[in-house]
Length: 179
Image (cartoon, rainbow, N blue to C red; front, side):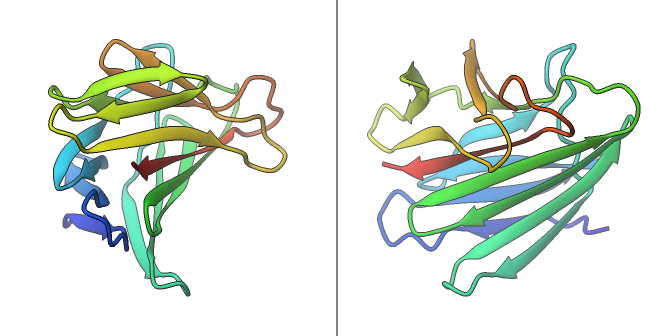
């Protein structure tokens, strides 16, 4: 198990670089999304009755285009989690999946918004902005054979969940784009 802090940086050349950072905390990796080296989002435990991703391993690999991709895996409460997070020129692309044993549970990834960031949810996309300018956009992305990810804002928590009406094990994807 990899227990040291692992960082994934995008290959962006613009000022508003995005970075995904993975920090081992207790028995799992916490995820953070940084914009211009400022923490924008931090993963948190989902609200009841949701189950959220638990990742105990992180593996990094270079992509043929010169970017980086992180693969995350983990298990908790009969849920087997996997994810990939890919850094490209101006975005981080997230792809989550959960295999469940027994009764299917409601799952979601939740992220706490930075205290000084503002959020505006419109037309299915979430714009996150720091008062002094840097901003990012979170938008669901399609996954073949699965409904599009649901994006919600509950106070200062961003909730990303599988689309409604899926059959089988849930899978959902979204991207964070520097703007």
